[in-house]
Image (cartoon, rainbow, N blue to C red; front, side, top):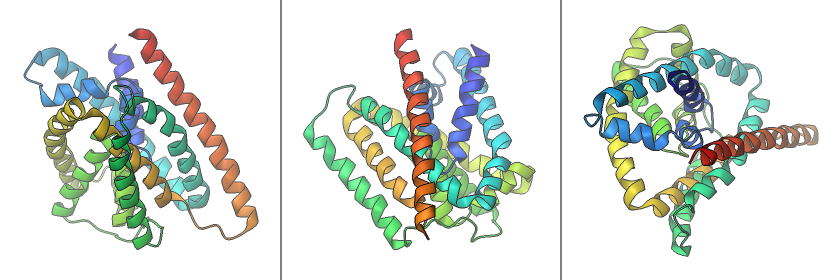
Length: 272
């Protein structure tokens, strides 16, 4: 069980730093989202088992973040165009599983309202930023900045559908944080970790409450963020050749993402 939790944590960690992907969404597809938020928000109940569970998941997340940060940094520096199209496909492929989870406890037409609002909000932000994310504008971070962006990373880990990497791109700090993680720069990682832990402790209880009391509203709000965040990743197409390459990459990554998410969902359903 511990090994399985570590492996699940690795996938969640990759999702936490991968552009356009949410660690929270991966946690949900892996069937551990509720367990994570409950363990963090109510750790004083059955402390020993929850502590062991969080340690195994946390170890996996750390391995996923540190082990893949350099790879992602290399891809976005050397193959930015192709990488963005691949991650767009990953996002599209995850939508069906998120939608199925959103309507699991019933569907009401008014649930579409929060989805549309968050969709328009995300698209509006993309338009204001000329539909382009900022991969490497900032070259240094203060202690206070690192604490703040640690909290931002927590958003993508705790809240399904919210990609912290996209938010970091908007802020122009994505590359510098990936470099800090890959190079293990303690002066950045320490405050980054403090911000992550602080926000995680606060959000986990709030999100757990929202999903229990307002499941449909909250989930369709998340779905709107997911749909809108796709627009922030689509790069400018300079030629017809680029368009064809982009469509091929999106198609392949969408099929792989959809197949992977459905297998995970089926495995979790068969255990219930």
